[in-house]
Image 1 (cartoon, rainbow, N blue to C red):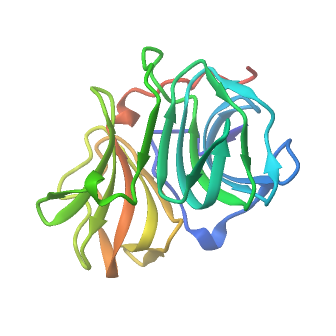
Image 2: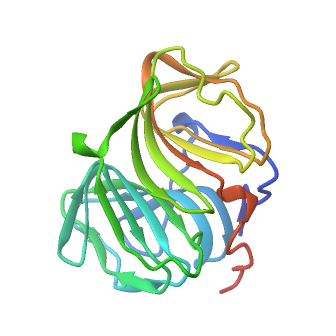
Length: 227
């Protein structure tokens, strides 16, 4: 399966155009943002758990990155309410579920094979935020390959001042972003290829965005078709 699989091209999806697809597990649906592969794939998705739904225990050979958007996501007897950011490194596994229901942003099979640390950050905790110029930034993960953060953008502020040399990917968490005549409300997703120029600005009430940069210059796991 190939969805937005050419990473040299821009891709985006506004929440009003979400198409929910049933997963193999009852009560779990997803919106496929990009995907290269079958059920075990390099994939970026919005995943929705109905109340009292679950997945059986499984492994993530290429790692898993999660941002909880709403409700409470749980795994292996640990609960993560909206705002928690998780990284489960390659070869790790878990048994995810949700008692109350949850919506999460998930990236699969996109980590370097030498990444070994589990990460769990509560972005609701003010101690995790720092002033960076005119913005407040919550740093989530950084290495030589990629940088991940949440950023609060003031109304009318331009998101990127320069071309994104390593590409960029963003998800609107609160507020809105505007690009040309398109407005991306909460849940809007944009992927900008390497060296892309963009004039994305925050809406009238500002925006909080998940932002990943650098990763598109060295795609990992794009050969997973059929695994």
